[in-house]
Length: 447
Image (cartoon, rainbow, N blue to C red):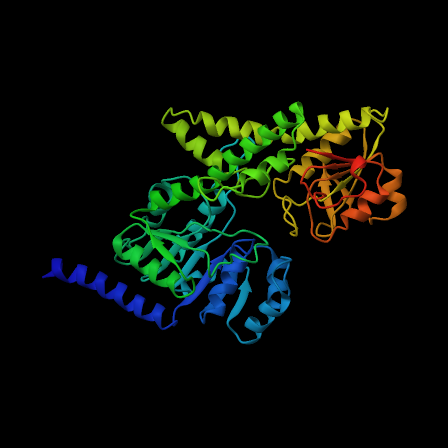
């Protein structure tokens, strides 16, 4: 009799939880209020759930609770209305996790100085959850990681308790697909992968995300979902490396690589455009392929294509420095002692995210080469280079005229490129930001 009751109890728990999810009666906690966690929390709250964000950064906690955003493309009013209507709040206390039915983990997964995955934030979150684990908890990891993390690292920690996965609590992985600053594809209309340790786990997670995302896709297990995330961003890494190397060859033979890409883009099948630049940045493209190659090394498998792509992309800041030397030499100037203005420190346009930004590496390399370096970025007020703070400089005619070269590293929409060209001695355009300007062409050098 006991043998039949136990599975029935597990089934009843899952069915009851599904019903509560559909009725939006479950309470939700999102751990980590960064570029993934905050937008996700807002979307869940907008759909009718009561959501609490959890973060150790007291400044983020206070800002959100006061209705203020620290991410430039998220409006204060969107946060304020949800806070006012008691649909959203943020705390920095992890000891309240047992109060919530659904727990979503959106913490950083960086790499160490030796290019190894650093899961310390994930493990810390899971260990805290384990201390507060209760029946009917639904736990989802969204942080990018290598295949096997959910099954082989997270589950054993949670299984130290008396609770059984798929019966007492439910666990799975759903990789984030956030593109900071993208106004076309947001969380609601970006398809979502979900996976679980058991079929019940998968079905529960599918039901939950289906309440606030238009298209949700089940994978057969968590390793598939984990590997899919790495494929998505490694695909981008490899193709960016291709066009970066193509840009170097085009420069040697005197061909405009930007026009080449534009021409190739007219093909209606079998091609999608990628663009060269001064390097890759953000949390995904520079980091995710390293998670893949690290996991491959466990099996003595060499991902040579990915290794080469990483090398090409990581070397682009050095290419920019060398090209800048050539530009200055044409004016009879050496890099040492030259005055350089860098436009844009964030890794992509119209956001403030400087994680892994090539601009920081270029700034540092220029200083090592003896150049006098300054920068402007309307989204980044200050940067830290070797423990020294540098402030974004206001652009004016005098400061641009005084510089030997202006380098466009990030093509922010707010820049008046015609005005920049007019007042600069020379412009090194690494983003093709000046493509539509017909005047002052003699001042432009493209990557």
